[in-house]
Image (cartoon, rainbow, N blue to C red; front, side):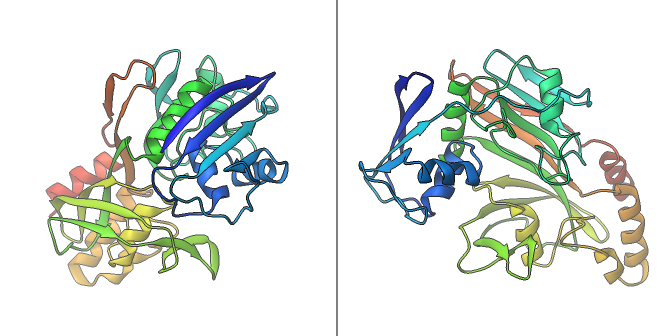
Length: 327
């Protein structure tokens, strides 16, 4: 898949994508991920005739095929109405094109119903000297997301050109993302890969589940430490579906410790000394035990390979130290 910028007319940016392999999803979802746009914005672009496939207007359910040429005319977004807020974040790297930041747990990435302020985007507007406009007025600069309760490294675009290139690298799986998690129970293997499709739970729209008609999801796991009733594991994503790590671990009955959606009261299922250990560990961790610890990518302008890592934050680090000395 290749993306080219064919110039602009006035303030409308024009982009072309030539598919070197079929897309495994509808065109509205495909463009949403490729350009880091919301699904609703892509749907509006299609309705307005600003998206064509081989010169013709597609339906939103169309699935791009090998050799298709997709042309997209992207009008400039409405300037963001969001206010900068002095919310504490750690900036690990910044230049004129991009930044790598560390998101604390509990911080929503961008405004959404029920979270109109106090988001990571509000913090970025305060701490950085500019954000790309590709994500529209609600998600400026956001190349990829982390769940609210997940902490760790995120890549942020400050210029539109960098945003396009980073989004394409993400779609082509050229950005490496590594996580550390604690999972309940004991895994059967030291290293393994789960290749299980994920889709939304029809009974609860806030949850995702493994389902045959879902989108392909691939996660690599490696045990780091074995404790009394849980294990510390390193995780590498090959795809990036919603709640992917959490759903995959639940599917093998080893959910992430303190997961408020997929493992509520899971620590109560252990008996005897294991149960007491699990309850103590839950209390010490105090939050979803999932941290984005590693990020590596090629700089969109210099092509230099950049890599970043960050240790477990508190209280997770203290929980690990306790688990080591009590297992």
